[in-house]
Image (cartoon, rainbow, N blue to C red):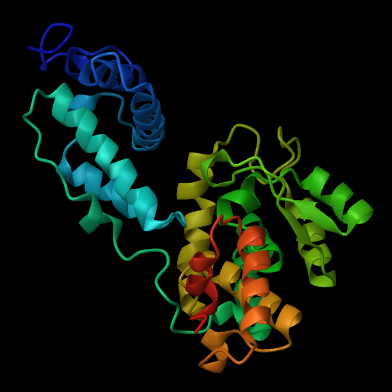
Amino acid sequence: MGKFGGIERRNHGWGKRVAWAGRQVLIDRFGGGHFGSVQSHAERWRLFDNWLKTQGIRDMRKVDRDLVERYAAYLRTQDLAAPTVQNRISTVNVVMRHAREGRWECVSPRALAGAARSQVRQEAPVSLDRHTYGQARDSLREAGLDRAAAALALAREFGVRSKEATLADLTRWAKEAERYGKINVQEGTKGGRGAPRWVPVTEEGRKALAFALKVRPPGSERRNLIAPGENYAIWLHGELREGRDRLHEFGLRGYHDARAGYACERYKQMTGREAPVVAGRRTAGKDADRQARQVIAHELGHGRTDVTVAYLGSSR
């Protein structure tokens, strides 16, 4: 029997709301102890609940293997490290197994996470070529997808994720660009990281920022690309997805390609050499390569330099 009257009741009897129910399951699962584990799992479960809502699901009874596989597929599009995807899937297993009193077929987090994010890039990003990138951006504009074009441009010129480009406080960015010649990426960052993350503003960056400000919806509540009455989920599955589909026509797998384009271009600016994935091998000195990767990792919002191989190619 479930904690509150049987597994056939809403959320298997653990409460009316999915996020709340999951936390109660975790507290019961860990016997009121292991506070750190409960908190970590609860936060990952909350993120799962947020995604469930975008699918119109508000009851744990509708969670099954196929749904978890769809969730994993979504996570793989969000520029997350493979271990992060694995942890989020593991949390779903922990909560569902206990909520259903063992009657849950656990899915393999490792299998669903796919290739590790630190996998060495073997091909130069398509968007490194500014002509191709420009064609892709203009195609989005011609299709009436101005905000998707703005997100692509911000990703290419500042190395930000599509979510960071979408949720950026563009007014603040404009002020910082004018005053400091760099912008501080804060909104929409992975894991809600709040440490300063300054990225230099080039002339192309100023143009991208000006365009984003121009197409920003009137009355945007948080001064970003989200329109009044719209939320991130609607945007994600609407214009942003439509834009991604169109990018495929130009060989770009998605907005993430623009981040890699930024990284490779930045590497050449700092070292005077092409990135290893472009040159076919590392041609910059070892120290210059290491220093460039440290800066680029920070600008991309990563805490480890080894992740840069997914953008720049091998450091050997």
